[in-house]
Length: 67
Image (cartoon, rainbow, N blue to C red):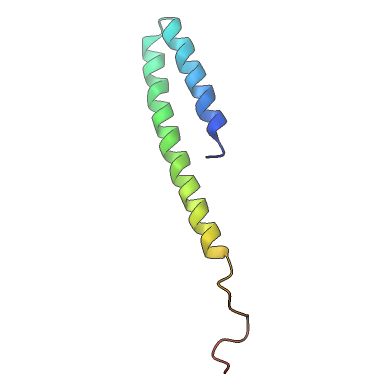
């Protein structure tokens, strides 16, 4: 996941909220972290699939069916 920095920032904010007795904020940030991880994981999976589909399959263009 190339956007791990985002999760790190959210975790730092959550830790700050916990240390400063900001329970509701900490809870919201915990939910936000879970959502961010889920969305970033899905996006990364979609990127991998797109890259795999873009790779050449070894065929030479314009030679389909030519034998």
